[in-house]
Length: 365
Ligand code: 13P
Ligand code: SF4
Image (cartoon, rainbow, N blue to C red; front, side):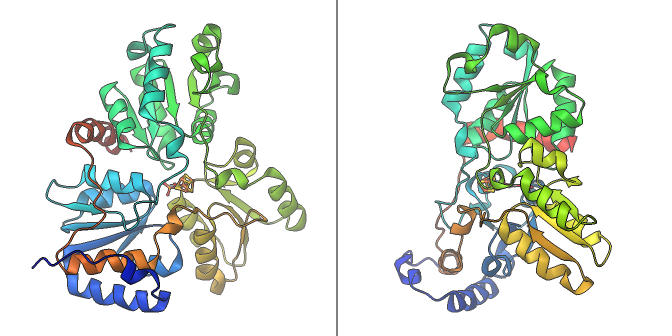
């Protein structure tokens, strides 16, 4: 039975502990009508309520496989969009706080990517020569652009495989929005660094000459993650000097120099699995978001493993952090009352094309 929507004001001042209890009660009342998917960067007092956790690729698959009427996405906006696109039409995707975006995803938008495509067409026919690849950290309309132009989506865990697929289609790749993931993945495929050029969307023709565009194998969008750019090679050097047997593991959104100096590189799920499977009594330096690192440190402490955060300053994903127990309790209690709040619905015309690019990715990875 539906009642009037409960306003968020009633939850704003709720203590975290009280919100936690209300989340548990609402989840129990909803039973299998709702599934709570949680990204690894979520704060501990949200993560503890997760039904399923994962990196972006795993969560995309889980969203597509879920039977629940309501998918509550504790992550950021693009993730809830992917859940909406890959789930059945009658399922509802919900983001507890609509302000939970991704600053990297915002560094590319459809107008700028279309302009880039137009400017590239002055040099060559992009639909014949260039596969557009969007990192999953992007808006649905950019995934739709890739769907419409023979392109594909990638995540941090499948980018090299996706690049291989892309080069089988066409001779060059336009990779957006994360330059670092694109460069690292290209480097792992033995593409020379000087064959990867940066497209600056604020400059005419990306700031590149015709010759540079013609010579390039990968055209990298000038985007980056504000969290991962904080990690520095000097953090690794300091750690190695202090702990010569220490092991360094980083996310591929880190700069090229950080990736090059790390022992292991991979997605959030890969980082968790690798450290958990590592030998006891080892020391790890981890280059990714703080909530994940702190949780991992607690989980492996009993095996004598020491997990350290790479940066000396606090690097949280401030947008993920917006999903707090108060917003989650508000969302769930509304569902119990029969009201859907904060639904993420991708317009049909975009969803159809974005799904093509996402399904290409799922088939390849
Ligand atoms: P993962 O796919 O590795 O979880 O990465 C998502 C993300 O946004 C990292 O910043
Ligand atoms: Fe986006 Fe960076 Fe946050 Fe990941 S950590 S969601 S890339 S802002």
